[in-house]
Length: 284
Image (tube, rainbow, N blue to C red):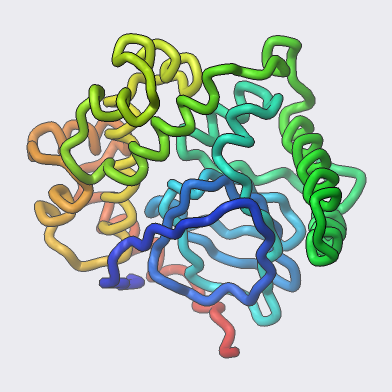
């Protein structure tokens, strides 16, 4: 079983491109959305405690607040991708099912041959434009990324395409939540950060994410706990507290409801899965 005793790292990011050999760092999170492809080989990623083998030239999209790290890679595998600011994705005409899945901490992996143009070729072109610099290059790439996100589920309805005036406030609320979800968190504090009344925030938050604020915070905490169960030997009660849960009964009930397993059984299953996987990390 892979054991990483380092803490979860929060990274400040904005719009930008990345192209690198992925090394197995400690788990990290960021408040941008990440779109990427791997070239040159398959990569095994850990998303919120769940291992996922990603083939090359397949678009992968997820919100950075899902704890993620690279576990293994085939020789020659490299990552090529973009970070998109949270407020962009909230304001863009992204299909509502796609936006909801991403904010619900799901990972979207496009099936093979879903696009006539290779995503790898597309990302290379975006990187080339951004390397040249200038506001026009950013506008071109942003427009093409919007179009690519629209095609994730075959297009958006007219309602999806309308600019949402409360997106900026929800962006502020989500930023506050992702920075403080491991601490005691009150809706009133989130509302102040968003610049809305608690009642208004509660209504629009559910409209954007499909769930209540407390449920959303619980989902972030559970994702963090799953990662620690998978990657560390820490005691379960210590993991519970580190993830922001204060009541063991509530923690175990939520964990069982979401995963169908107790924390101990989840850790054992993860250990067996890692034991059965071939080590394909290449030396570099």
